[in-house]
Length: 94
Ligand code: FES
Image (cartoon, rainbow, N blue to C red; front, side, top):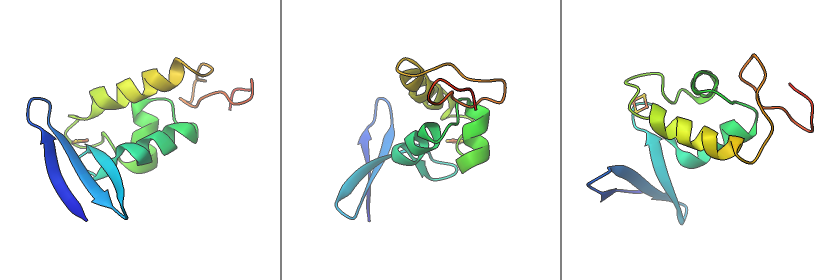
C-alpha cells in the first residue's frame, strides 16, 4: 500500500493497493471513493444513508460536500429517491 497527498490546494489523499489507485474521501472512517460509489449504487441516496452503510461522513463532516457531489452525479443519471433515502430501481421506489 502506498499513501500520498496529491493536491495541496484541495487536499486529496490517495493510496494504491493491488495496482489500483483510490482516492480516500472520508479520512475519519478511511472510506475511499470506490466504496462510496458502490454504496450509492447499492441504493443509498442521502449522506445519512451512506453514513449508515459505510460510516463515511459520520465523524467530523469534512467529507459531506464530496458525498453530496457524488450523490448529485448519480442523481443526474438516475431516478429520484424515496422517503427512506433509497434510489429507485427499475422504475420502482425501493
Ligand atoms: S472526513 Fe468524513 S467524517 Fe471526517
